[in-house]
Image 1 (cartoon, rainbow, N blue to C red):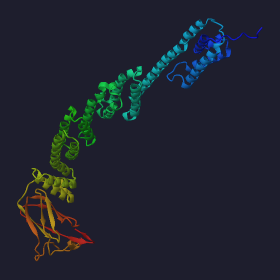
Image 2: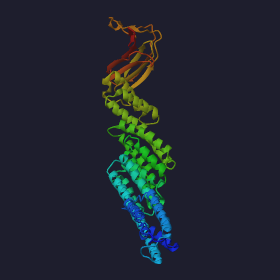
Image 3: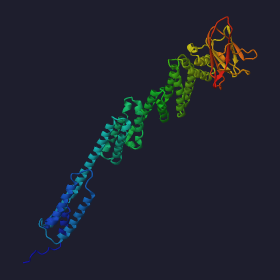
Image 4: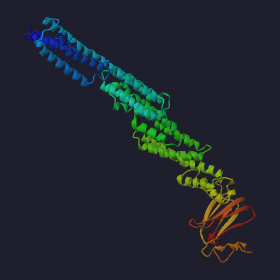
Length: 505
């Protein structure tokens, strides 16, 4: 008897059935041919693929594994076709039944692929939702921080929202982005809702940059949501700092006028600045007139600076700046009076002299000139500053002042009457030695052969303080005298110079 059954005649239908059964990935074609090792190889390959693929995640199956598995199935189908061409089947023995079974079992890999694709899509959706949730938590965490610290967190969250909206537009996570953006905006701008307008400026400016990166269809009305709030914050923050001597209000109002020139908030800038100027001008008559004058000077400079950057409010601002300058100039008088009364005679002199220069038509100009003289006298004779000089003039007592000095001198006097005049130098006079006043019988202005420059003034009775000041380029120390004037006497003042060891008096 033969040792093995003879080969079956070639049968393409049977070979096709074997090939289709092998494509199921279960090696059933080999099983019907009693090829156990190839059957085990196919089953092992399918098990390995399942271990790699399950559970389904967002990354899916590695491409290399899919390629290798597909190549293996194709090889099994081709090899099974040749093996089944001359080998009879065990069961089902009928070729048509095996063919139909092979076709039906193709649903196994196809259905598995479809199921896996659906599972992977769900895993991707879950991963995207997790990203969305992490971004939400990042926004919530940043809400409790200073904006400067929280800025990077807000930017990272926004980048996630943008990526979901742009690159995963059909996902469930992307569908939730518009609602998340509403929360994002209100969280970033929380300082505004708390009326902390200065702190709200920077976050709102940040929100105005969001449309540069986020699709408009995701933002909707949020694209312009920060505008009115930012305009309000710029105005309120500027108004809060207006008049405090700082410069932040200029920056805030400047940003408002340049960014929202036609807004209702911009229209309120000039009235606010005007009110600050009036308040400072009113303070000139208060307890600190010098502080008010300084504030008016600062306001003038700042308002001009603000007007230079505004096209819509420039005219109004220039008018307020001019009024601030005039109010400051006029306020110098009250400031000088306060300095004089406080004993700051040097500063009072400078202030009153500046007032006289700045206000040629002011009604207080004449008295300011007198106060400046009194302040200068009081720097040498402090007792002269006990009373504020008046504009009074004249009197019934004659006082003649002569110059026995080689220098031009200015004579300053204050008391019941205040004034000053200049005497030219005595051409034939020289400086006396320092010891001359100690010599018995020595008397200046007594040489009958000299023609002393002199001037006679009329003063009322009372104490008058005199200071003889040498010409402006002289290094000589001013001379002084305190005269108690009474009726019935004729008084003479003599200015002279003494010199010793390089010093002049």
